[in-house]
Length: 287
Image (cartoon, rainbow, N blue to C red; front, side, top):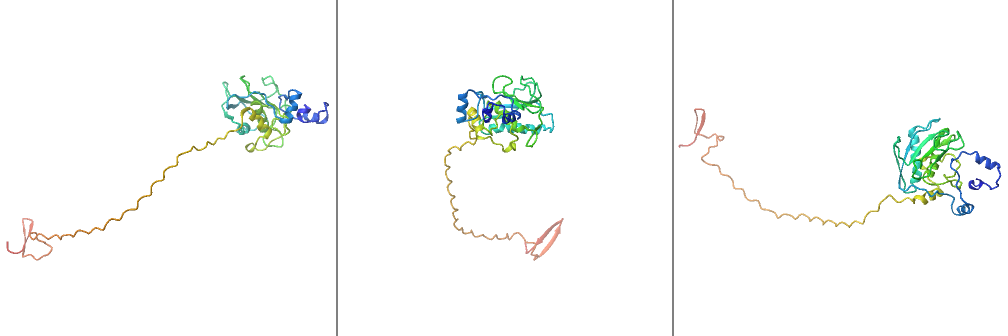
């Protein structure tokens, strides 16, 4: 334990070791392997993987219940915390996480729940403090990927008291994706609780954790597709300027000569006017 935690390897229960033992932590064991393997890992990297991984790029998740102790993070807050904790891992890999509704037929890969003491998974919690949460590695079993949080803890977010749910969720989801504990001092996969890690919307995994998860799922591919090589469109021909029309000589208008047989009654120079049976007759000259 001393060696994995970066303490002086005395083999004695000194004050630093006692302090570490009283620090809240993940309930999964510290898998370190053989002496030679540990030395090799210290030279090159400090993260560890289980060799287990999801054999698909889309991983589903669901929440079965919520914290029951003060400060009573509301369901909407818990949903956001869990979504962003998963996003920390998908931001650097080709994984995608999709939330599903929880019910008795829930087939989500990662089922999230809060439980106390013996919560029927064979790994009981120990009350407030001590172990905080645990998750099961990827696999084909129904419990694979499931993530459990101790409901005896006072779960908080970005507070200087209680236990920060986001920090613990990022850690446990690392296990649910196939990562073991890391001996790197500031790694989110370090087994011991390190306090809150700031705002979930701006959280970024440290290098050791990025390399660890990318060793299982690869690095993030660019989501922007390159533009295809399109043919250069032909430029339209410039419009021809309008040609001026030749001046046209107007045709002379031929004056219309009045019909001499039709009298213009407005002139008034008639020889006689007669009204016969309601019709008016105008007379001029001798006819």
